[in-house]
Image 1 (tube, one colour):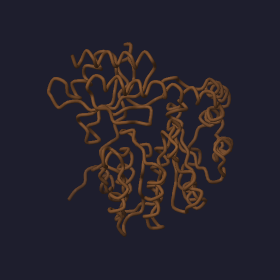
Image 2: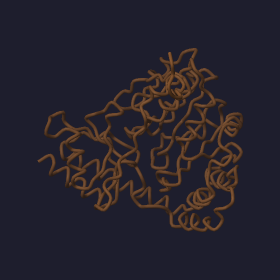
Image 3: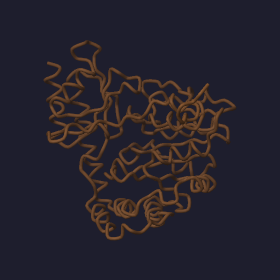
Image 4: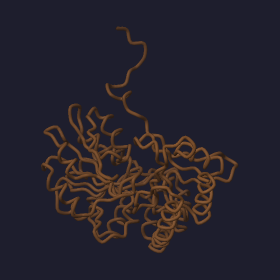
Length: 363
């Protein structure tokens, strides 16, 4: 057979491309509630550090991101040498898959897990294995039941996006205990800072005591630096060594490093972000529930809202109605949840306006 143009390696064209949340029309008053971004903006200290870094844009950044790793290590009591920084936690998830997956391997993620997981798995020639969830919550037994001799990675978002639910640390430990030592457990804790539950642990303890656990974190959510694409992973030394071998030599920009250092040291900003979410997450949940909608309990900065299957009041019609009135939310069709919308907790104005708009839609 004659090939008329370059062809990607097998499996690439089977990948469903990730579609980010919509941003809305330019020039109109739009409340973007589709990407779980910070409703209170960014730390002013981070903004100032970013601007200051603009005076030396002709220079390469520190390829080891030393100042950033040291700041993260100081904030969480970690070893800086076990921290690897990336262009968002997305890049780190991709690097992990690239380093540890080959054709013929398998990697497991839960039914409503982050859509980057299957992309990372399939792009490296491995097979994505989906473990069903129970009540929109990852099921440890279902995950363990799907571990085979070919399993190399288990991805677990905790808390999970888009459901907002989380596994207590006891269940995460049970999952880890059931995995063979050669299987890498990747704990994606992008929303960890929002969780205020005594039975939750982001993954630091497991990484510190095991050889096969990695925790990833992001600056895109509570720190309000989504535009800079900044994330980090805490790893056993041997995993950090592997990731540093395969990442780009200057994968974090100098302005991002500077802003990241300032953001993680700005404790007041983080506490304001937490306080805002603790006030408005239950408010949004309560108000949407009072409209007769089912809301999955969330510990993140968003809610998964389930709509009736009727033609008039279904999720697709609600999404269209909200867009017409300047509220951009996230459709869940790609997750196999066409009857649901994911809605970010926004500013007070956005939250009150959204509820009022949905009340009109349902009336």
